[in-house]
Length: 254
Image 1 (cartoon, one colour):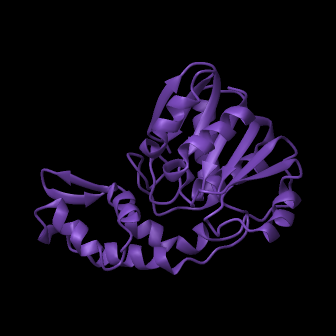
Image 2 (cartoon, helix red, strand yellow):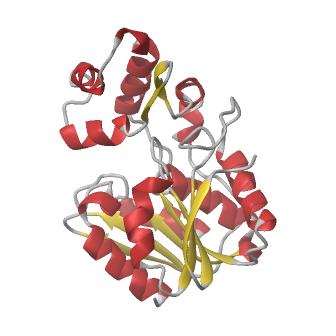
């Protein structure tokens, strides 16, 4: 699959993979801050952003999409950052193509399985919502307050709302994401190990990566370093940008 992407900077190739409901644009500010020594590629993963839609969706498929992108652009070995769902896609790629990854950064996700009824509710609500009934974005946002009371999270989700000449539509493939939500939340299981430098960054206000997850992390990534940003939530790139950039610059030496 040919993925949409944005590109900035000059230097070593560095790829950033967004999370569920995300897109390349979410990471543009951080990309600009670490692009001094890197050519940064911000990818829209399948079923997100401007990339094509498909009913097929798994971490192995996302890893193959990434590998195809690296080959197509003749990038050699890359530095790879992944957040949340993108972090699991990055793990899967590094485990299957270790020769293509020089350094790996995983942002607020562990290789374990998750269960988040919130995402089920949001996707079910999106599927049930008849966008043709709405004439304004504000009215759609108001409708979402019942399922997403947090204004910041609601704004993040509604970045996927697009207005066309025919009316409103979702950028993401809502049906495919709902159908494959179990796969998205599944653990990364592998008999392989990625032995190269790996940085796991977690938010101190997030419950996605717990102290007891460190054993599972090191089983697959024995060289892993785990750092915590105390003020950060799961969306570290949004609410702890300065601290996250500092850790990325130190680790990537940029």
